[in-house]
Length: 113
Image (cartoon, rainbow, N blue to C red; front, side):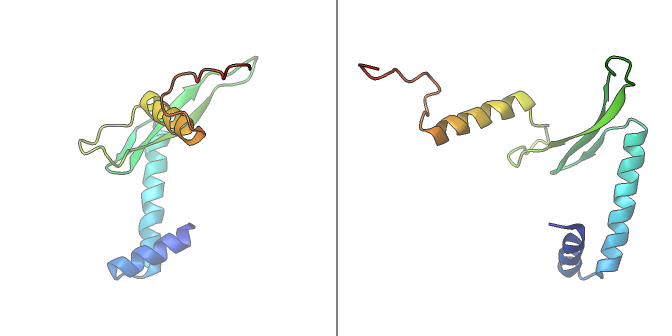
């Protein structure tokens, strides 16, 4: 979805003009960028958290700052952040299930193989 489409849908749902919604979005994104430039963490309830991570430079290269985003899970009623390690475990479980191995254990080889 593009920002223009998002603005149009929000405008329709909130009985506003797309231009007014675009102005709100522009200001919102500007404020988020300013906070990140200052090294602040930006948490948006029921959406996610933006943060800045310093990455050290290698072999004479300067370090840099990366913006990270962690999406909040839909099942998090208390507003706790998704643990990245738990998310990885869930992805591995789904991948095994999709591959036909739901136990998570090694499948024994058939006799004669």
